[in-house]
Length: 113
Length: 116
Image (tube, rainbow over all chains, first blue to last red; front, side, top):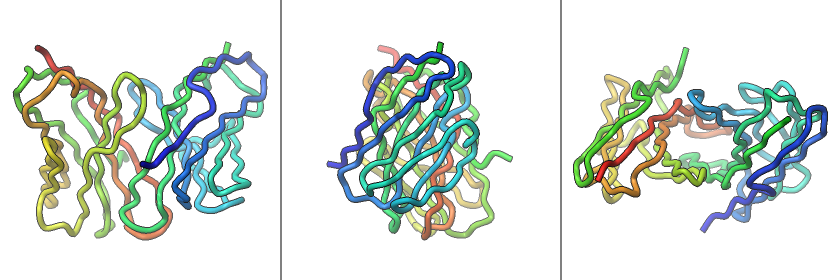
């Protein structure tokens, strides 16, 4: 079974803190994705990566950065957390070829106070 | 413009009945794929079913089937014989250009509640 793990299920941080959300997948997938999910807005793509050290902006990249130093790991960074970044963050991975199905991690619920 | 539209924020269904969750999509790309995911209260997104734009038959996976009407650009999910465990958020998603690195685009979701 594909396994996508995220470093924390729940996280509470203060405004202005630097926040790291880690995601690891064990299926050797080329693609990895970070979404945020807010009530009534569905899933919105923040960044994705199709190879090591490669990244592409999604629909809402402002206030976020990412890092992919190894194929299995994709990190989301909030350089200076703000209260409007309180959300559920979902990581996913998927193959480059084929139908493009994405496999998701359990999510991290981040609260910024 | 929204690429994926789910017009039903919430739905109720009686246990053992069938339910249809609506999804319409917008694309000019002839090659695309359509997906449905389930998100229980635990938060994890679970892949349910896939339909390719060139597939001749509607996709089925157990109690899930996809009513694909290409000319209407709709891809409704049908759940037969609903169970209490089907209560969850359901998301429709699309991937354009079946090759390459295009990510999925998601709708806003429909919350399904199954009543005993």
